[in-house]
Image (cartoon, rainbow, N blue to C red; front, side):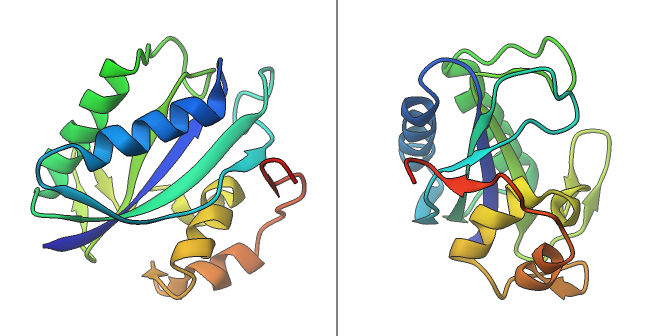
Length: 159
């Protein structure tokens, strides 16, 4: 079993309900066991900022799937939950990204691991730091990477 970390986000409809459904669907996927999950965090939009706020979360999974098979499982969950890819960084009912996979380095047309922007996005690092503060990605821990970023506006959901 390999350890991997996923980032989840939603900014359409019942955001919290959608994140819960996605985590349950991942846990029900053969070859994936959800080992830990963060709280949900309300975050401002990033990239394309003309859209509603997001709820973001992170999950640690244990998997016997390869990195590409894990990506396929995440994409299948997105599709089952109604994800439509209309515009880059635009609104989405659910987004599931493979952030890190047991130290694997992958770079092809389908998958880049560790995730290309993981250390540049506070909305990813805040929930990830809750469940894996000492995880090292790109030579620095999640906590160290987060310390370099502005996490203004990222708050636990319901706080």
